[in-house]
Image (cartoon, rainbow, N blue to C red; front, side, top):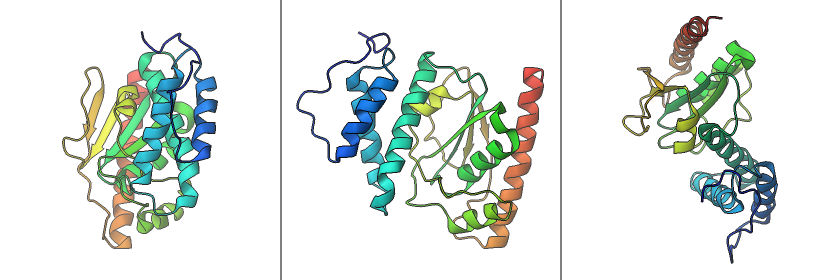
Length: 222
């Protein structure tokens, strides 16, 4: 039996949550996605998301809020991929290795330039613990705050939900699905680079994002 149309069901028997907030989150998301995913599916996604972020978390105070965002976004992406939830705009996924520099800059710049005309996600094939400080600094020069951003592991659900997948040095880690548009941007990794070099990477990403958004607008007839 599939998850669609099942609604809220009894959770996994004997399930133990390592943190109390995870149990509350699973209950809230089970109610939010009632009729789309079973309680078992929601619980599995919550615990998988928590475990994935725990591997790279350095500040446990941030782990709770990040788990909430990550698990919610993954379930939303899965619902989109299943056709149970539509966003009505193109979905763009940026992927690099660490999700600490290039893909994060691309996601924030795209949202800044395109507003609500697209929906953006980013992920990393081998996510870092925190964002590159130089990346945060050069984005702040443009008045763009990255305080709420954090590295996230690449998961199959966000790829399935994407219309356009932009890769930046993540190799063959990104799964390929038919019917999606794939772009590979050969950009320098900002890790260990000077602020001047990172500023140049930022500007190149901005130019590429602008060009991509123009192509998407033409394709849609906008």
